[in-house]
Length: 224
Image 1 (cartoon, one colour):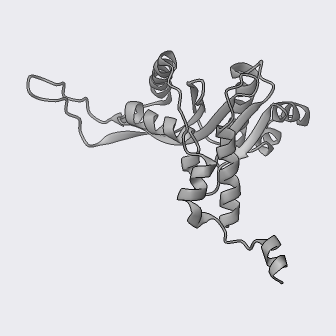
Image 2 (spheres, rainbow, N blue to C red):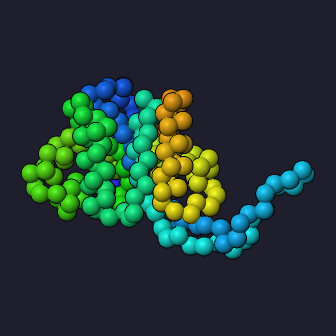
């Protein structure tokens, strides 16, 4: 399995070495579940020397899913609050990505993890084959290795989103969409690119324990 990990890791790292090209934008993609919670009792407002107080009990509002796309080199991101994380949901967001977010791109270079809905097959689950093939032709897929989600820049966006926006009670999907939309708008207004510095050369030094031990076949042939 180490060779599989290494191959996928180096593939993603080589993608991150590519220069910015608006015709082939590099977009990272991930998802996160969010439990919706409302206050069982109205919070007590803050006062002089006293912070706002909330009851530890809360009302469950179900679950929502957040689909995150980000283009690290441009400093752009989009987050969709969806009802579920089915193949059909993923497919609809991918169609929106190529048709609305990047209508002029020749192909979107997509980095994502290995969730079973993260692949062109989800398009065929959701759309007629002609439409699925049209969307699939606009996407170039690169999957991070299993247990290698740290290689997905969308994880950075999700971490920031969780700390800056989601670390509180959000009662329903409408509120979630509004709050996340405001967070995304501000991040895109500021223009916050991500500079990826870890390279294949770094991996071969710092993560050399992950690389399979191989025999130099040419040298072995001479010695024989």
